[in-house]
Length: 116
Image (cartoon, rainbow, N blue to C red):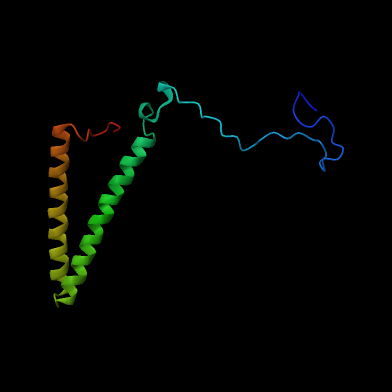
């Protein structure tokens, strides 16, 4: 017996009598202090999320443009016509995205340069 824990004697128990600690006991994690939060760190986790969202938007745009290019090629457009139409679609999509981001900034839903 160790510190009042375990068997008084190991005889007849089929064990060595060694007391082990429970390594799988879940302890509550310490809550972060306000000074160490990701929002106060420039380029912290929130900045990373914004970068990931921007990357996903760009990826979706390029995916749509690729589908447009393939559709135009199937319809029999020449390479020059296809390039011109894809460039027009890209410019229109970028202008639309700029308008949407301006509206979001105006409403205060998406502050530019600040973490969410």
